[in-house]
Image 1 (cartoon, rainbow, N blue to C red):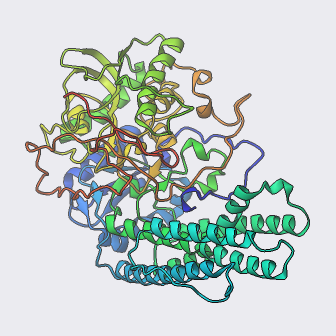
Image 2: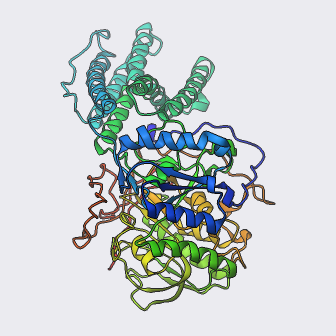
Image 3: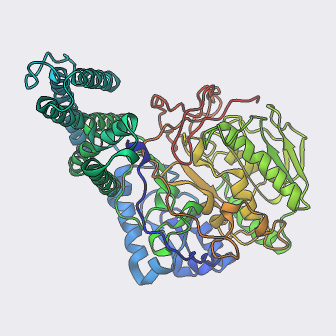
Amino acid sequence: MLKHWVFFLSVFSAAMPAAASLTPQEVAIVAMAESRESRAVAEYYAKVRGVPEENILLLDGKPVRELARTEWDGRVRPAIRSWLRAEGREERIRCFVTCWDVPLRIGRRSSNAPEVVERTEYLVRMRETAVGTLAELVGRLAAVGTASPGRVREQPRWEPTVDRKEVAAAVEDAFRAAQQRLGALPAASADRKQQTAVLERAFGAAVGINGLLRSIARGRSPETLEGEAARRLDMMRGQLVGLGEGLQAISRLPDTLARDRQLVGLVQRTGGLLGVLEWIDTEQELLRKNETGASFDSELAMIKSPEYVLFRWQPNLLHYRFDALPDGLRDVIMVSRLEAPTLEITRRLIDDAVRVERQGLQGTVYLDARGISYDPAKDQPGSYGQFDASLRDLAARLRAHTDLKVVLDNEPALFQPGDGPDAAVYCGWYSLAKYVPAFDWNPGAVGYHIASAEARTIRKPGATVWCSAMLEAGVAATLGPVFEPYLASFPLPDDFFPLLMTGRYTLAETYYRTNPFNSWAMILIGDPLYRPFAKNPPLSEVALPEHLRTPGEPGVPAQPLVPERPAPPAAPAMPDEPAMPDEPAMPDEPAMPEEPATPGQPRMFDDPAVPEKSVLPGMSAIPPRGR
């Protein structure tokens, strides 16, 4: 029931015009006041790109790789928000650049935080109450159609922690048995009508309006109902829509006890006590997993937003799925990072971007797929097959519409050393934290590797995680996760690279137009103003996938505004490969401890034999491959 909440937002009949390309005046630079290197990178970038000096924000505090959640909430976030609101910056700043020594990660919220303890205790009490009441309802249903319909029969003796599937099965069995007993009574008798009302009240309390509507749909076509029955059906549908709007609005509030108390009542009316059990189990699992950490940059993207739920991600409102939203509601600031294994490489990221823009990025496109089949009619969005197919689709698109040399490897093995001369663009998967030096990177090269924690460090020369190694080997821009992100956190290759190759969008705009989530694990590394294909773009916008063509262009309608909110979904992650004994975390970069995945949510390290059904845009794992 709660897995398919929908944003109930206004749909605008006219397409919203696309924002102009990002300019230096719209960029703010974040550096650490107590780091000479951080300030030097900020000043150099501002000078090279013409970013106004007043757009540099210096954060107080000593440089750390992981910022405590309490520090972010209590000191850093308020300071950035205050700076942004001063002197009209909030209206003109569209992008932040985080420089060398700005924290890489924000830690998890403490499980001992008062609000967490409070919610944990409340959910335990509520589950015990819901289980006890459902047991009583089963007893009431068992009495329907008997000689003593008002008497509660023997009830199940459930523990408060009973599996909700067992409870749901007992309710369903009791309901069907009661229906059969009622069917034996005379159709027009007063007793049958009275007991039918008792049945409806008891079953409705267990399953809510949603369950009653499903029951009607199973038993009789709604179109055949007439008179009072039809009016009641319409009324229930209307109530369900209103309750859904309330659920959506309240669920987006910070996860506090006050929010939980409001939600429980709405959930109970919508899905009954069984819905309450499902909601409680979901919230308890989220509390247990405590996925409240984030990359600093991804959390910074939400700096203009009011308080929001921390568990897992927030939808990125700059993503193309939200094109119909007016700019005033898309309160996301793009963020890119200027940091690499050394200061010299960090400076090269800037210099290469500026120099390559003048003549345009040249070289070969390397795409490393696996040959995994994909059937859009059968396979779930976000599956392994979809990502693999996206690499093949990208290759086909570039071969059909550009003069670029494209090398597609559609076999399980990765590209090997010597396979990639003259490399300008790369995307592939999967070799966990074991970079394969297959490419001779041209200046300004752009690429990313889809794997679980390839940006967990970007400051350790010689590290084998892909982001760090690719930067050290010569790329100018890449992206990756600072901890387990789940597959759907990556932009689809056939979304990201075609947009970049039109030359219309900067690196930051391309990423945020295709990045699904904020307040999560991913970071973008490189000059946000970099437009590698600004000169002589190889791909025309008419050759983009239809969903990426700019709303307002001739013949291109605005996207319909009905995106699903990714509430706790089945989120398979990337598959298992051995950890990195040769790659311990840096002393100043404590690795975020890994936790087992939620049932039904194998992480990127798990065996991906059976991809799970998932919520928009889909969460699936990445199969392991040769190293």
